[in-house]
Image (cartoon, rainbow, N blue to C red; front, side):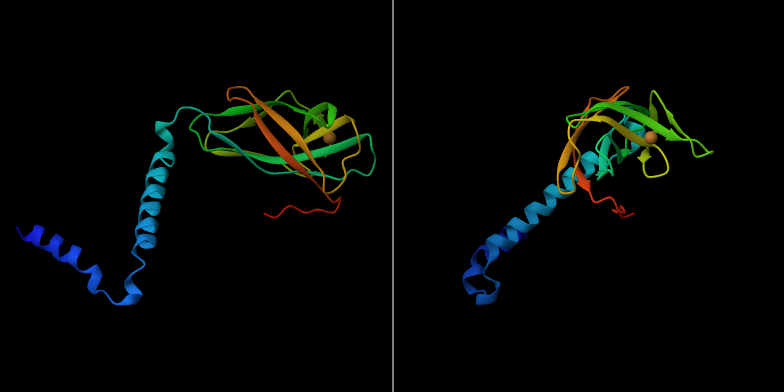
Length: 175
Ligand SMILES: [Cu+2]
């Protein structure tokens, strides 16, 4: 009966609380919110070994404003938090008729490739001087402040559509 009497005393307490302790509804909402966050975290952040599928996300995508109107480059990172590898097999865009995945060899030469690997629990990075996307047959010259759309196609995962900002030619990505 101890619990019941505590509950009773709690119920009767608010009326006697000093004014500064009264905004209880806000407090209750905050607690419920953090409980939901904890649930979501435990649902999504489980051990990778229990997850035999690739789980992909795209970040840091941009197109530097090209010097000429016939060719541009695209850069982005694909992060795989799943326990299975995947591969980027092609990219399509509303901005260009021909997009080619390229890698830069150790001699500094560019080479078109059919796909780029995305390791399990790893990432594929397209960045200046390394792997990149070449856009040819531009429908119009991409200008800083605009954006284009990339649709990324993968060997296993469903395609991902990404809105990609056009940055000034001198843009340096952070990190
Ligand atoms: Cu290239």
